[in-house]
Image (cartoon, rainbow, N blue to C red; front, side):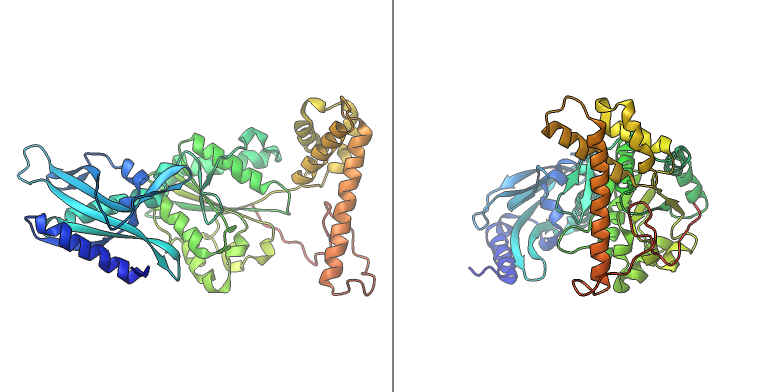
Length: 449
């Protein structure tokens, strides 16, 4: 039999009409159903007493013989998802209800689609008089599958190479100026505990948007991870939007995440890193409408979107400067004081810290957190490689100097490449460097947080 989409559809319909429908006493209709109806994990979250309509409830499903479709199960993040073949769903009357029990046969198979590769085809044979009951059941299956309810124990990923991940960074592991750290957590916590009710009272969608801006390496990703873990500890649903799969940074991923939030039946945090990458010309208007709230699906429990950017100058002023599109912008700074830099270095060195290591702390002021982490990790690795039973100061100093030289060389290489004079002429001497990064910006961009 040809593997085309149309032939499989016809083959399934013919099999149902010839082998199943003749044995049924009531009138039947064939319905193209959502793939969620054969998603075993989604089905496991539907209670056996789910009300499919007045006087009727869903009871169970069983496997049904189907010789035309091989039966197998696919898995997603170690959980069973789609099952091919046939399933028989049974619905029973409530106590004292005049309704009678009925069954629905669902046959599903994978098909090849030139546009989206493999996709699931599911066809249901439904008693005509119970069509509305079945459609309500379909809606519940889709709600559970699309909200990622079965995967709430982890951070759910949209558009990434992995389905979920564990948020491993604790809030106590985050190093920011004390006032800023407390302000961020207070903003997030207050929105869910008090803000959602205020939004609803004012007839506004409870949708808040925060932006973390800062040079690379200041810890924005770690901050997002820590807030994800904090949110899970509160029982919230956390969705991470990734641009790492073959589709890249596309607006529909953000919209899918907001759809999940709307159907999650829980307070939800949506994390979008590198927001500027999603602001392509063909999707900018859509994203503006979503940030406005006009086209964002509503989650009555509250949705908080946390976005990051290394390049705020690339974000349209219509996003940055219009009230309501981004409710708050936090600047995530480099280390501003020796006390903060020493605290972070102590954390990364752990038991290997000695007071003599304080000598390099002044050189760490103005550096991003990722730089300090790398200084510590490289030094610890070098000491272990040389079989030291402690971390000598000179090893730590060498680590610092080597990383500064690497950053300097990288910046010289990139600058020469951008100017188009690679290997042809020496690059012009640039201005003073700031924080290990090129400091030749013509103007400084600042935001009020």
